Image (cartoon, rainbow, N blue to C red; front, top):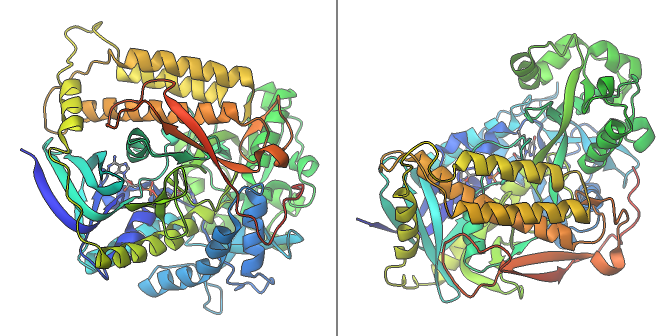
Length: 605
Ligand SMILES: Cc1cc2nc3c(=O)[nH]c(=O)nc-3n(C[C@H](O)[C@H](O)[C@H](O)COP(=O)(O)OP(=O)(O)OC[C@H]3O[C@@H](n4cnc5c(N)ncnc54)[C@H](O)[C@@H]3O)c2cc1C
């Protein structure tokens, strides 16, 4: 039996973006949050490094204009500049708001919020590195998530924990809610809303080596795509330079903010060659490419496919790479990077205070996603607002990050645009009545899930296994739509994904039960990831230039004449339902970049 709920505002996702939106929405209308994870397990809790805001607490001459400039330049001039301006300006006030909620930021000796350096964040338009990242040791995301969750509880936001959204509900062009499965019981729930926000985070699990949590499969983003709505800039996927070798677990840029350096097989600090002024604190796209270039030139450690990140105090002091060139001590590093140091000890079995750490680039962040305006309202392919539908956080594309996001700019994006979206949802809910739910609106996705649930394997060899197809998808994406890309490699990925989609039709599962059927949900997630992986590979193949996180060996230069524009991709097979999108049934579109203050220039660091 389907259960029905009605709320003015429904938010899918309980990460930083969802909770900030929920907090503000709940101040003006009745608000629910649906999350497939228990809220405080959301990936925001894994963010270590910090959250950017030009508070200028360290007296190094910071201002929001510099933050805006760094964001635009870091994004290789693809960011919409009005949005980047909002990000940089609103960041300051959003941090103060978090502080007043009780977030335990690190403090300077005189009691202000402490700040540290991060890649690509500079003063005076690129002149020198600046300390802009506010932090709580290297547990900043954890503190944000806990603080916001407590505030939402206080505000009596209604939480539907471990509810899995499977479809978006539309009445004509208006969004009227969503369908979710209660994981514990398998029951179907329909949420009827005036305003629905998708805040479901990233989808890094389409790649093999990733910093992303297992849950980051992008199902709600796929739901939007499956309803025929466009996704924007999907080709731009960030590889973070410092993932633990083979595991992909992130060692935050905070380590380099504190002075760690990258070292090749010849013992050289190679970033001096690639980014003479900011060196190891260049933006991520540039560092990931530099690492790959070193490895390809045979200068990986012992000629292998990794390099070292060295954060031993003696190395930092030798290169004078600590903040302000000052000496660092082991005690200081242990205090400012406790989680990162512990990760290395636990996952690699080595002590980073005694030994350099093997690292390689890891798939980290989706710059693209659901297109929105500055109020988090979702836009269609003609840039018209879709009434009732909102998106914020990593799954949204405002776009503030353009072709490459700077470190610490995601957490600030969550709170700035989550807050704007939450407030806008209240305004909308106040002036609008509920639009009717179409009859049996949940029937199609329910039938689809039922058919999947009944496809039970009879013997070990029967049907395709989810894990086999998922591994094959992750392998082809990792190999072919990676830090460096060519037409050939991306065409191979597209062909592989076509084959995997065909094989998906014969997927079988082992558990036909209703209670905690994660077997079924993983099969459903795989379908969503195949759609999103196809969007990434297709749009990457189409963009014939190199910009930010999209580096093509066959088109090595940025081409502003032809490609200074956002890409759009949407489904066009005529159907409007929740099923896997048939391979190749898609259409491309584009929209202009909103420039403004800063003319695109060559990007030097
Ligand atoms: C290891 C790591 C470290 C990072 N460090 C930093 C940093 O220091 N600074 C920085 O700025 N950025 C950092 N980032 C990036 C940043 O943390 C993320 O981009 C950001 O936290 C995403 O937040 P979000 O609110 O969009 O989504 P998330 O926090 O990922 O939350 C997603 C939510 O959506 C829900 N959800 C997903 N699918 C469904 C579904 N089908 N049904 C119901 N609910 C669903 C989940 O339950 C979850 O609650 C880091 C990322 C990683 C992976």
